[in-house]
Structures are given as structure tokens and as C-alpha cells.
Picture (cartoon, rainbow, N blue to C red):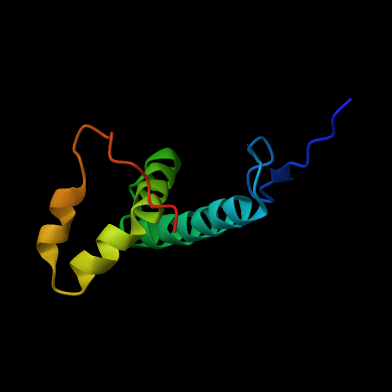
Length: 91
């Protein structure tokens, strides 16, 4: 019988990872998403909890693109595929 080591995100207990670094990146992304959600809901109180979470996760997954856009490179947002198939940032 083989033994496999798996890692679990502390913020997403259902998600398992084969690599500790990957689990840590996922945790950090979820932490950023949570903070973004809070800021977005403060800025727009009529935003539903689900909408806020979805926006927060989207922005956190694509944080590198948004960081470029906020540094006067607005055309970086063109990298976001409106169909939702843009691969998420994992770094």
C-alpha cells in the first residue's frame, strides 16, 4: 500500500494539494479575496455577499494583471478573457 502526502488549504478544507507551496498560494489567494470582498462591499453596500465573493476571488486570482493595470498599464486588463477562460494567476 502506498502512502501519499496531501496538503489542505486552511481556508478551503475541501481542496487538496499535492504540493505544500501550491496549498500556501491557494490560502494566500483566498485571504486576498476575502479582504477584497470586504472592501468591495464597503464601497458598494448593495453588492450581495455572493457577488462580492465572486468579484473578490476573480480579482485575487488575477492579481498580477490588476497590479499592472493599477501601475498605469490599463491595457494589461486586455489580458482578461471576457469568456472567463483566462487561466488564474497562481504566483
